[in-house]
Image (tube, rainbow, N blue to C red; front, side, top):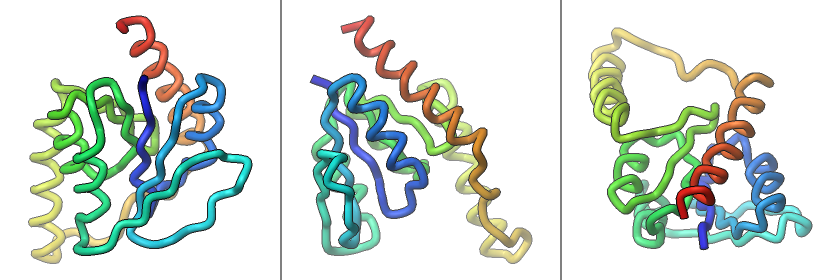
Length: 150
């Protein structure tokens, strides 16, 4: 049975994940480096991991299996989860695939070098209403695809 894992420390779409998961009766696990209060009505599990910066990522990779869904914006985590057969969606509804992960990893590495050299500053663009809508559509489509191919 498909489960949803959320890399939840900086996830702006937690309520949307729950909304879609309830519709399809899927279990959701939020994984975080620090404790956070989840509304009781969400009926979701919270796993708080201790350790280094990648502890939450490592926990997700250790538990995710084929056709589970991971919600994250962390490109190296995306790649690791895909190796386990998981489907991965970004916060803005972008679907990660075998065809686009190589370019995304290369771009991430390049941006890291440019930021380190002081060539680029600032963070990601603000999260918009359109991003939320695109995420809902992408997650819904991903679940339908998994069910169709099961």
